[in-house]
Length: 368
Ligand code: SF4
Image (cartoon, rainbow, N blue to C red):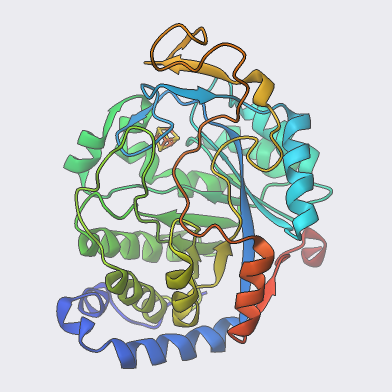
């Protein structure tokens, strides 16, 4: 897997304001490269939120410890219920997502979830709190093949400001996560920045440098880059910087031109129309029909939600924030999604654009 031979300074030029004037030729080249390397396919995946418990305070995230929200951690049986609903929609590629909470979301719990899903799910990835290499190994052995960890921001000062409490404050521990995951045996490594914190061009350059490093250091891995922009969430954090739709399109082209074989991931954070427009520029993986709350697909776990204020469980009805007693509802989501189309509707649009939606993209059996 490689890059074009383009350097980071070439990449800086591709994302510059001057290059924004050259979007048409950039888009044509990015489109041709993507077709050459990936064919006319878009791979679909779904996030499955296991838990919204979290011991970190990240100012931009709805799951932040201090946010007064409804929380739950699904049991393994409830995870299977959620997964069955996604399976019924056609998905075979799943991303297990959870906040960072060693008590509720332990390594053993994650391993048990993966083991329970493994027979039905050829592709399982995780987006969870960073762990030690040794703690990843049983999860890989249970059947997980991908690990996603966003640095959020590569700007250390802003990183420090955004992460006010919890182990996530440690920038270096987080930035080294993909390498630990690779050593433990993960074969898909997902990275990215959360656009809306530092200047987008600075973040993109750091993501490119990180991807370049991983492609050389973790050369057997398949690297993906996600391009999430901040969305409204509990806590009502306002973005610190702005990235326009056009900037995002330019960035998709720039990543493709720099890294022809890297997977580019687009989530339901973006509006339907923009998502459709970005497909021909280099996107290879999309989520669809997503819910960002545990139990979002079936209502699983809603009898067990509890309310927390500043990290402490409070009785329902005990404060102006806490819902009244007897109020049974889903846990709170991480952020609001923007593309609310069903997976089938998204698949249909992908076909209309001349691409094949692919639900299953990897099978352990093929490598043995
Ligand atoms: S971004 Fe992750 S670590 Fe931070 S509060 Fe949200 S779930 Fe927790």
